[in-house]
Amino acid sequence: MALALETTIRSIVRGGISTLAEFNRKRLPLPDKPHPYLRGIHAPMDSELTYTDLEVTGAIPPQLNGRYLRIGPNPIAADPKSYHWFLGDGMVHGVSLQAGRAGWYRNRWIRSRSVGKALDVPAAAGPRHSVFDTVNTNVIGHDGSAWALVEAGSTPVKLGEMLDEQSYDDFGGTLDGGFTGHPHRDPASGELHAICYDATVPNEVRHVVVAPDGRFSMGALVGGRGYPFRWNRSHQARIGLLPREGSASDVIWIDVDPCYIFHTVNAFDLPDGRVVLDAVVYDRMFHATHQGPDANPRGLERWMIDPEARTAERHLIDPSPQEFPRIDERRTGRAYRFAYSMDLPKVFSDQLVGATSIFRHDLEAGTRQRHEFGPNRFPGEFVFVPRHANAAEDEGWLLGFVVDMGNNLTDLAIIDAQAFEAEPVATVRIPHCVPAGFHGNWVASPSYG
Image (cartoon, rainbow, N blue to C red; front, top):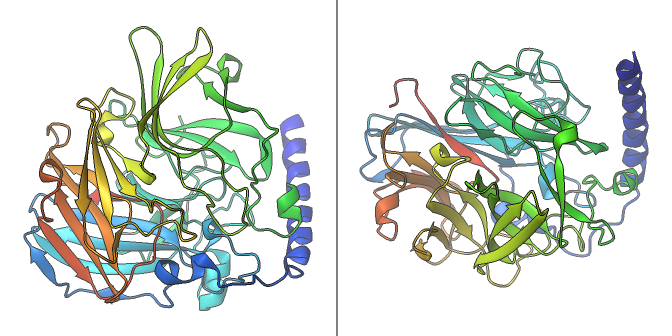
């Protein structure tokens, strides 16, 4: 009864906040310059396209049978007064690879209520966790399907093979609340582990585990700003360690110097009980603008966390600004050697992206390689795909979009991870710019591996 009452009260409060926020949003002043996340490489596409005759350079590895999918914000009708990059209508971009051929490219908006209204089409069916049902952060494969996810908000969206079929899905009624845009799969059990929170419930964090079959095992917002998070130097920064089989009372909280982390690389236990955490770390975030990220990271760090002493020693691995770190996902939660990340401009750019290379870190040798794509060719996040099920770490390919702004083109580049600095083994040409987005993944066909 108490839980039901609390849920009802929260629903009423959220509704009131949303109404007040919408009222104040209309009174915000126009920005004094063009919005950085509505122009350039972030300029949204205005239509959904399908191409089946794609130009290929080089040879697509025949082992790659599946879809490369990536998602990001693509607002249909953004208001530059209140628009924040993280809140744009979600759009999925996909390229199908089969037997050494590029089958198709498609881009499709996630059919939220607002998108359905704007396109004059039915919104995707299924339960919503909240009024704000935009999904734009990540696309993963799980339980034989592709799922579009968002951080700190809506119910996941299940996608059909061609991206047209969409449905909001709370994992068969087993998800209570929102999900996350950054789940991690345990390679041994196949379970998805997720740390979930809701932007409108600031005092609650949940650990959610999704079984392999797809089931469970406010001030700024009120003021009209769509994105409710702000930097507050008076708040103590902490990192929490939750035993995998533990409960909330078992969490160990460790104070750390003020900082911010969007993306961890990986974490694993040491024999002596300490935990290693690798991450891209910022000194601060969301302190100067309401439009998007407003600082460069200080670099790639390794934290040595001691749960007994309750300390976290920070060591700088690489001071270069970089983001969207990825690994061979079969090493998630385990000791690993290689990490791959997207280079960032040395001087902070209000569009965040703008560097022309990606990095390969050999954490065992303490070295870094750079794959350079050339002038005015801007890569996004690259994902690692193993050559076969039993491949060694780093034995496989890196896949990601590279945008050529000058020629209004995008390539899906396929790089041999063990020949990182060499030319891509293949590129698939997309005849337009794919806007800078967030995360994506390789979703293999069932016969893969």
